[in-house]
Length: 400
Image (cartoon, rainbow, N blue to C red; front, side):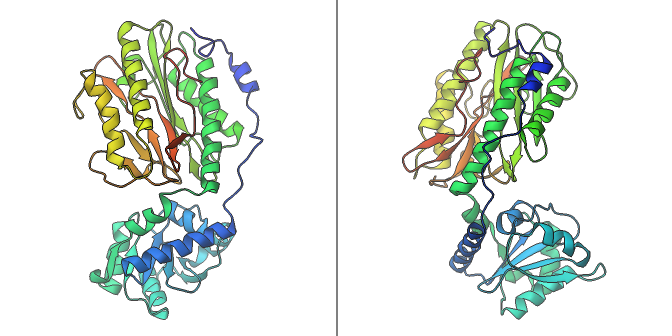
């Protein structure tokens, strides 16, 4: 085995975990204001009077409020002018004030009241008749608003939300870079812990603790650790596996920094690779490289997926989603949500623009045997693409 796999004790790995020193700055007040004005420009282009952003990642994007959705409506109403309006339960006002990053009016509602009526009231006060609704809102929100406004007054806000969020600012890219750098360090240490008999559960626990120690928001946002035949399942299978000589190891994990995600997968061999394992690993590496090389402004998302599949199909895999081969899209956008637009998949004609970010992970599955996924993220530049993390070098050298 290379010096990158095995050889570390738990104590030695833990000794390398220190709080991150070069932390990216938070999103500024000016940037929040720019986001709101961008949304207003897109509202005008779509011909709608108001936009309602529901609790979730888009509410964090526009207002800094890191709340998930619940059965109680919390939303940001944006109209053509004036401060945004926050619709929120009255008893949550203090908690809201503690996290809110923008100036805003409030329409607060008591538990027995209809919050959708508060939205309609705020719209009437601003002379707004038509509403674009956040696609992340629950169907119950659409139902409640339809009763107040009429279904014909409500349209889909996907073009507005994605139009704002798809292209990342330098400040967003810096936060994502920090998250990726932290996860890559955790991946390196996890590979160093490899030894005969170690359990997947032990590595999952270490990876979470390591993310926390480096300063991630809440440890690992997710963690998939699979050995041997279990690597053939893209998102793993239940149960604890114990590592044996000659098995592939697949670790897919990430964290958040001020809400912005990392998501990195490494697949490497514990011991000596067989000819079949090495062949598939090198095809995966070539497919990932081909997808990256195809990235530049003005090309379609689906063409990046096609570039990866062409490599695999020339080698006799697939075609399409058939196995052995690539069973899913080549990549997904990433930012405040771990999966967001743009998606690198057939049928997506969206043209790449500078600042767009996506994963590059054209996994190869050999049913009943093993799978190989190499996942790194990139962002689109003016003349191509830039990796957040350097890709793997070899099946026994997962880190550059």
